[in-house]
Length: 170
Image (cartoon, rainbow, N blue to C red; front, side, top):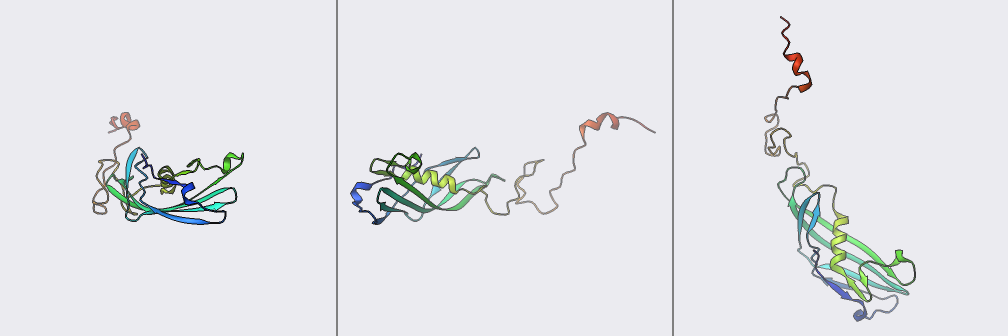
């Protein structure tokens, strides 16, 4: 569950064309991805840039985090650095496409936005290392630790031919 970081837009007192950068500690919370739970850790505070337009706001969110959890190939501990750079627009009017789901009145819900932006910035696979070889499909041993060629299994015979193997043709 993401932290409830919020920015009161009215307190920024921005005029049309003005902008401000706000540095704040972000906690996008944990993510469930591929049936596994991943936690985040932060080194630097995140940045939110707020720009006032004639009819609304433009926002930019940037932060770096490490996502920690099981590798998707070998299940070992993985720590994947992720850089998030997301933008949102919230304008007045009747067009729902121009309203940000993270703005409630004059309040920007940065924690919820950070959680969703992190989910969109994820790579296709979270791996312990780029060349992760995964697990052996026969015995389940990690192929990252096995010597090349030393972890070969004899393939099992096809069970559909079992009756033919029973024939004695001598």
